[in-house]
Length: 218
Image (cartoon, rainbow, N blue to C red; front, side, top):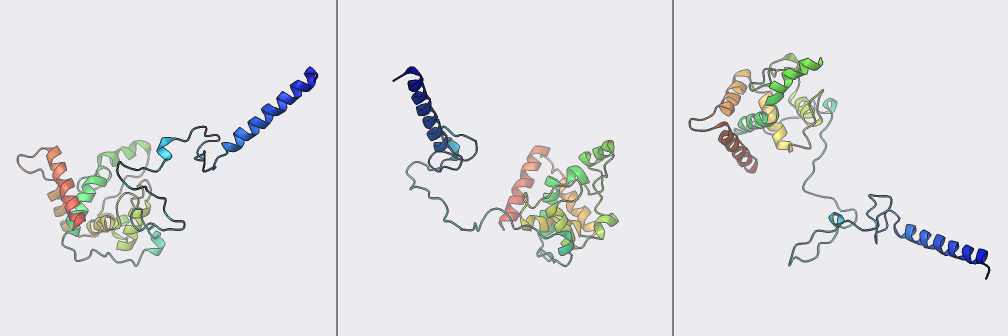
């Protein structure tokens, strides 16, 4: 066999081997590839099914199965939420729960008393952006409970959407706070902001978190 013909045979063998290797590493191949990279030579451990010691094997969910816990059902738009009723109306703990959630999630922008004086909200002025409104402003009081719920869920202006961060009952508890009378809201927020004698701000924060979790569990 001439050297030219022998060289051609070797080139053909190398080309065929390359085709086989690339085919074996094609993204989506259940045997080798996770589909995350163009070529997965080695399957990464964090893509594997998790199984603890002495536990039976964990199988993948059946095809077309639907989760019944976790995640959230998308909230309606503001236009479609005007007539929604607050399911926590009449719940004696809703206002307290809303105040605890407000302290944790909203006070930095709207202020400790919801009076448009939050530390982060005041910084908006430096960027010529509108400040988060006070709850007593026309912009907020004109919203129905359903529209308020939609705004909290889907976000509004610079406020991020909270439907992926707070569950449905939490968001309705915040609606209870927003739609309460000025005196009721002021009393609820004052109680949450007060630090008991002998407490530090840290221990008070821990107590608030524990109380919120207890309200969520009831």
